[in-house]
Length: 494
Image 1 (cartoon, rainbow, N blue to C red):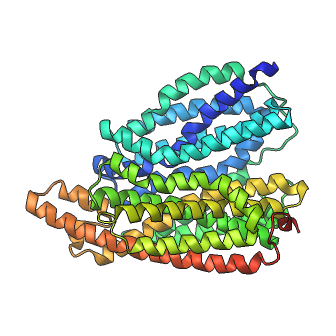
Image 2 (image 1 turned 45 degrees about the horizontal axis):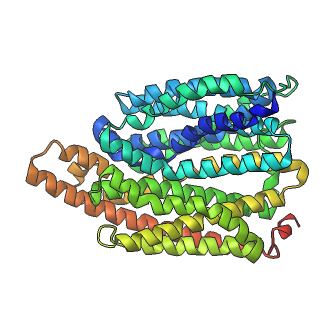
Image 3 (image 1 turned 90 degrees about the vertical axis):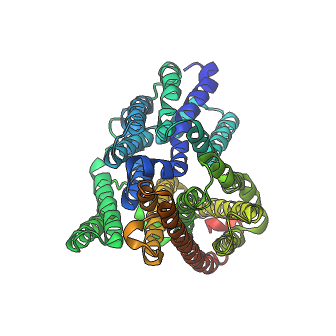
């Protein structure tokens, strides 16, 4: 590839990568709108949201391996086509089941694009200085993409229908595809590399069955044998996956890295932090629109302190870890996040907007710092020859944390909501179902239902945030103990 094309390559892969990142957060703002439009239940909403990171968690590593085997350019181009078709399917879905399928297809396309980005940048930039600049630009765009997702979703929903949050991907991909086809390097495929897709399928089926068991068991409207059978299947497959990784000649994930306490602590921090951000965003978006009464755009603006602070925390935390050390940064980030959740549980989002914004910024910065500290612990604790395996484990843990965070926040909110609402028959199992029912009622009756649903949802929101605060507080103590003696970045290697 001519060296003059390398910056065009960077532009192409960033343009391809941005919609994949934005799609991780843009839908949170659209949940109230699509709930009403499709009549989705609380369980269906959770599947719509978390099927995307759940499938990404299982497919990122095998799709990266497939790129090594047949060429990352080819995999990315196919991924772009899949992502475009999936965006159209999701945008024009007529039922919750169709939208879940569209989101699943989006995840398949996204999992083909994301691993190819870094591999293509590595091939295109041979100079280490230029490569560092290119990776820096990629990191900033990635952070910004996740941050602007709720705002972009709010803006689109202010003027268009909920499907526009997916349809916006289509013109972007229409520009990216010919550019990528023209400038992406061919690379050198290695047919000798084994592609173990069966390992990923075991992990994916195990995860989906386990998450189904949690959701069906919590809602309680399915025969008891269904969640029990799903839990047995899911946990059995996950145990089988773990044994397969321990015995396989070429495992998908090197689970032996869990034996290192620093890596285990880092993975837990990344898992819990990504889950807390994703789960809280989803609950907050519903509270702001269903209870406080904000428009989608107003809700997106309200959430910006959380997202911008999380995006800005990376560079700042990278400096802090060299000044105060890995252990101190990890524990401080977790303690502050715990305190922020506890404080947000008692804040009136409607009457105390400025205090809410300050607490959201504090929470975003502390959780973002913890994510960075987790990455330092993982990569610093891994031997140089296992850096790739550690990176794969971290990426999987990050996506899995986001998916399960959405599941647990959503299930716990729904459970507390059902036990708190004064009108259980009309209120359904979620505030979205109550809003759907209220739309069919007359004025006074609809107002009474939404007041009861709003009070129940606020009580559920507060209880879940208090639970999250307690869990993160315990993780902070765990990090203090496990990372003892690892006071610097260099210490993370020891």
